[in-house]
Length: 103
Image 1: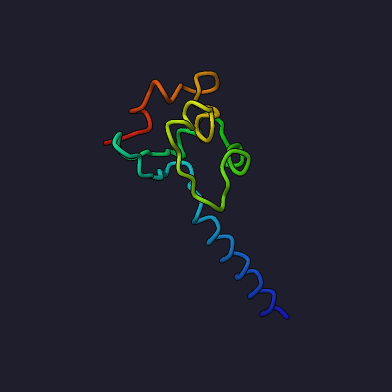
Image 2: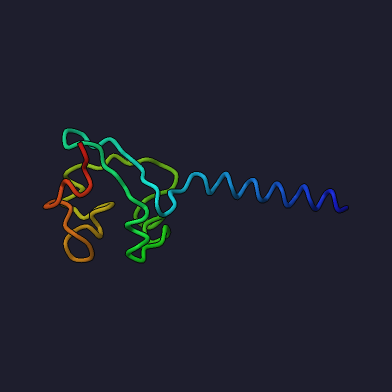
């Protein structure tokens, strides 16, 4: 019985680790292709330092299961990142391109 319990605990722990490895913890960056302006760098630490939690954006603003292509029209329509980065909650992305885009 103890072996079964131990195997179950290990399986749950391993499953938790695999799921956690897919997330971007504070202190880590994720880079996306950003077109002519350069790659877009998402910094998990900057967002965490501002008091943000993963579920503040996931899944209400971003789906966890599909990748999105973000366009200039999305910038202007306050979609995705720009729901907050519109000048009211956070810096206005449309006026601060190099804060996210890096060459």
